Amino acid sequence: MNQIIAIAPPLTTMSLTTNQIQIIKSTIPVLQQHGNEITTHFYSTLLREKPELNNIFNQANQANNHQAAALAGSLYAYASHIDDLGALSPAVERICHKHASLYIRPEHYDVVGEYLLRAMGDVLGAALTQEVLEAWGAAYWQLAGIMVKREGQMLRDAEGWTDYREFKIDKKVKESEEITSFYLKPVDGEELPGYLPGRYVSVMTTVPQLRYLQSRQYSLSDAPGKDCYRISVKREAGLSTKQEGAEAHPGYISNILHDEKKEGDVLSVSHPAGEFFLDPEKETTQPVVLISAGIGLTPMMAILNTLIQRRSQQRISWIHATRSTSAQAFGPYIRDVTKIHDNIKASIFITIPDAARDVEGVDYQYSGRMELDKLDRSEDLFLDNKSTQYYVCGPEGFMAAMEQSLRGMGVDDESIKMEVFGTGQIPKN
Image 1 (cartoon, one colour):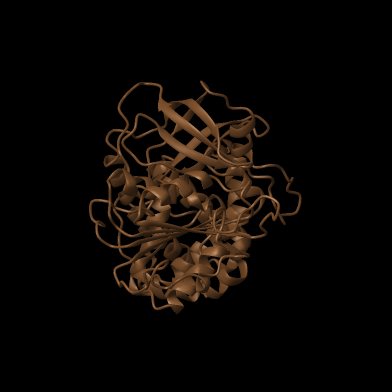
Image 2 (cartoon, rainbow, N blue to C red):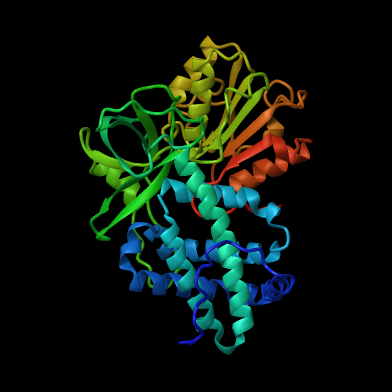
């Protein structure tokens, strides 16, 4: 093991010196070559020596190496923008929301900093000189200070909800062959705070085979203002992993919720969080286009129902891609909504329609993968109105394709909002 001593957290967060910035930038090629090795070693050592942290970290993302890869990418991005941190603001905001929903505390940053710098020393050996170590120590605490401050503000804004609360499953409703809705009521009977539609909550429960608690984030799938929160959960069939020695398994929490949790059972739930949302107080006139695939429709349901609840006259286009009608949640509801509300239009893409059951023009409008070019630029995409707001949620590849299509149609970046599930980042084209 490399014996260089880790840098302790400073009493106040200081800016990096010009020399430290240059040192960090000089390590970019090293991070390209060894970043994943460093972060994999970091998580392995941390969770072995601090097993209680397994209750916080997603064990599925540990097994498939997504967590290590995401951290390696974050280190590379941080080093690349060390002299222009403003470029990282959207990513930092996203991470802070997730940390706040998991109730990450300042003391966790102390532990992570110690083990991350130690992992750099273990992997890089003599190449991690004292000067480089000190630069990275200062860089880590600069970023940690920013995040601790932001996450603290988020918890102060949570109306006193600063730790997990117990919620009872009041109702469990099957929405499709793979999606079930859970209506959650607080055990303490206290009134629920509102939330901006599009946000998520963290749900925590014990996973017996892991012997640890685990949390997952689920978008709230209905409008606020009710006496319960609704989440709609897709059963995840299994973990796909290339990590050597990792054991494939069905999605831990989703399958426990579907198969084991019953009405009346209790779950631990966080306050609503997330930087993907529609603000109905501010966005009152712009047309809204909701583009989703698969389980990505859940935050869109919250946005749609909020606008309906407020009797909004905004033009709304619901555009959804699904494998089949049996896999699609809320299909009948969307059809009813479009019949009742003249300002709402739906366009459904089904990958391979069932000729014996699916009726074109009723169950779906288009067959095959979603292609925005098939839609009417004015009636479906509202491209004739520059104030139109586009919300996109689904698998990463799907979102990248939708973003590219919208940009190609002249939509500016500020008008496109995307929800990123999991640890990955949206690939840019």
